[in-house]
Image (cartoon, rainbow, N blue to C red; front, side, top):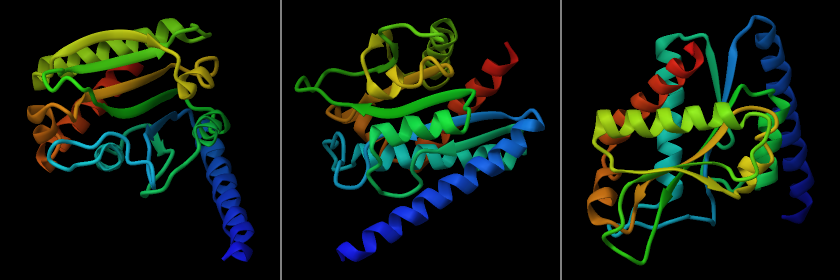
Amino acid sequence: MSTLKPFYKILLTMSLYLMVLSLNCQNIEGKKIVVIDPGHGGKDSGAIGLNGIMEKDIVLSLAKEIVQLNTNNKSDFEIYLTRYKDTLISLSDRTRLARNLKADLFISLHCNQSENPTARGMEVYVNAEGGNFLKESVLLAYALQKQIKTKLGFESRGVKYGDFQVLREVTNYCPSVLVEFGFLSNWDESEYLFYDVNIIKLSNVILDTIYKYFEI
């Protein structure tokens, strides 16, 4: 098995290289590039809900639905994911992808968890140390929490500053936020995220917010 590892590494590098080449051609045409990062993956399940759902699965389903909706809309935006399957990608590789693709926007998707079963609501984080795109990141963060609260009824725990590696390594290259979509330790929110129909609703709101953000 160990003899196959270098081969898979070469395939991964070639895939990334081809993606960057393709995207560079599209950038010449003036298309906006959005990188969405579904957190965790593989052996890292992230939070586990009271009903057994896993954070890694929820955020991947959410990210893939956003891509599909954007494709159906035939928009002027290109959306790429840091992972398309249940695989564990290092944080450095996730941010490197965004930088190599010269992303115009980076959004990391997560779900929350707490020992307090009554804790609920979404949070949106921007980089605690600021960065070249702090103002734009804060604008996007407020827009996301406002739209999700208004259209879907999510409680908002506000926009916060956090020291997350995925934000730290991207904030000087493009606007970037990390979103925590409710608490899987809360029965109501865990149940909400269990159903595909709600994932589609959430995806629509996120995508619509991205569209409106670029209109500013």
